[in-house]
Amino acid sequence: MNNYTVDSNLQKLIPYFSLGLIILIVLQISLGASIRLTGSGLSCPDWPLCYGLWIPLKSKLLLISDLNYEYYQVMLEWLHRLNAALLIVPVTLFVCIAIMLINKTKKIKYIASLTLFVLMMQGLMGGFTVFDKNSPWSVAVHLGLALILLFLVIKIHLFSKNIIFEQINTVPKDNIYIFITTIIFVYFTMLMGAIVSKSGSSLACDLWPLCSSDNMSILQINKLIHIVHRALALISAFFVLWSCIVLSKLKIKYISSLRFLIIIVLFMQIFMGAMVIFFELNILIAMIHQILAVILFIMLSTIIWISLDINNKLK
Image 1 (cartoon, rainbow, N blue to C red):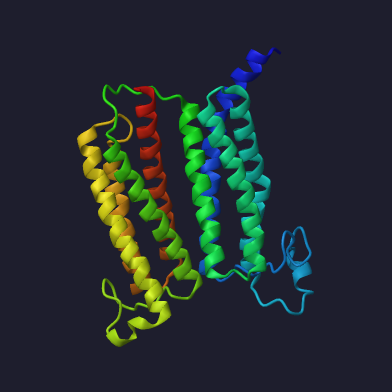
Image 2 (image 1 turned 120 degrees about the horizontal axis):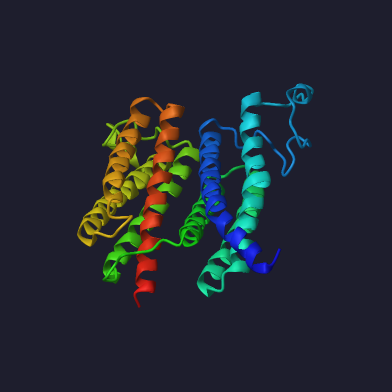
């Protein structure tokens, strides 16, 4: 088998593996959310093992006298680690190394190298969150790195698809700046959501859209954390809608039609945020709230990368 055949086979595999990697990262973020919501972050107190075990079997955990968690909590944390170690790490290594071997484009090689660096930092941060007793800031940084990894892998996937754009004009830089500003606000809103959840501030504001009937209590730290999250969410919603208006004028193949789905997801997200309060942090509703935010992040990432790609090809 010659080098051309090997390169051709790798080229065909990368789109499937990169798409699979996106799904795995979304699953990992969702598992992380379920761990936060169920208070399972320290159910495995050591790292990379879990109570000194590679596989925390229930029969062995029953022998541990100071086990303060339910078995499902331990399994959630263990599955979170398992998905990272046995699926995300090897698939990311394969996709990044393959794309660096068969492509001569410097930019995509840089993206692949940066992806590997973020993956390494994410692994280290995962261990640090355990040693730091799952503090709100370390959990937020851990989520932030996962979102950056997702952002980069989306670029690799789009590049591997080799989409042909029937675009005559470039996307104005001002419009791209709006898209980037939007995803930055969505990004920090998601990080603040993790801090809200981990700091026990989810129900610090017991009303919606107002915070509390007790206005004098808004200076409490938990209420301030919650209010900052809502303020970021409001700004994010404004920029998301602005981005949709911009998209309606651009009429770009593949992404202009995304504006309808973005608007639907945005209003579903707002509705679920309110339901989290009304149903007093129902875990299922809170999980949907998190997943919708990730879907919104993926769509915005796609818009940014395709807009940049159009401009690069039409230079």
